[in-house]
Image (cartoon, rainbow, N blue to C red):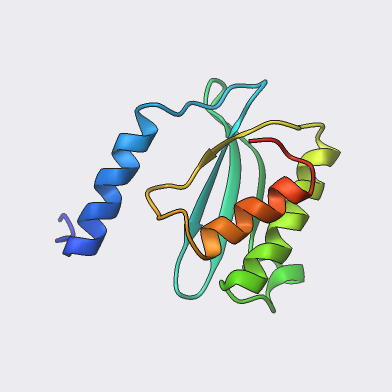
Length: 120
């Protein structure tokens, strides 16, 4: 019934729970969460008060299907996410790294979103 977690997954889950105790997205400042796997990279902007996803992006979309979940792909996704948020008039967000270390792909995505004009 429950998946047995290895040590790496257990540590990430513990960090995720610790982070989510303090982060909350509102309509004025929604929460942007990222998820990565070996094959894909996903990001969502969520208003936790209303329980709605305001914007999302992933390498599963047709226009980004050629991108890999590496630093270059995450940089392009971050720029595109910044543009989508600007279209929806969202300028400030709370970044939820979802328990992943702020390094590599996650950092590249966050930095390119900042360069697109979104404040964290």
